[in-house]
Length: 124
Image 1 (cartoon, rainbow, N blue to C red):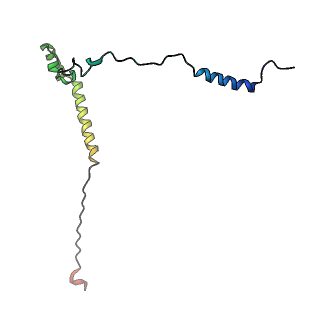
Image 2 (cartoon, rainbow, N blue to C red):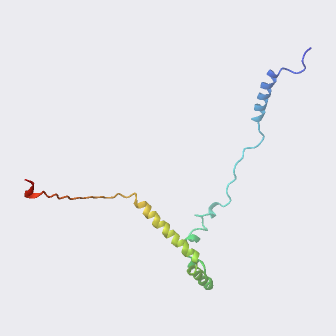
Image 3 (cartoon, rainbow, N blue to C red):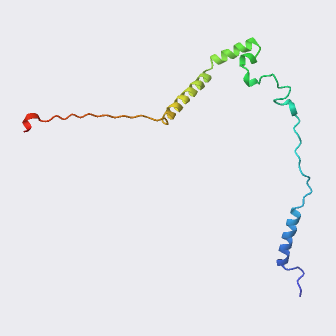
């Protein structure tokens, strides 16, 4: 009696080739990234010429309201957290300078002098 199914040795390579062949086919179109809509308006464009960046402006020039300026000055003067942070930064800088000093060349010198006297005339 003859088997209705072909032997597995012929089906496995056929299925492998079929899956690889169909896997390489795609109907998805090639993606092209669209251009950015900002163009020349971003830094360096006509809108940005002559104007300072907000990071370059001092806070006193940035804020126009006198009451707000006074409030900011008061907050900066009485801010303990800011003082502690500034002291921590100074402490870290000092520790860094101390640690970095170990890399500098050092000069060392040592001297000694020994004078031995004889026993004099008694040693004859």
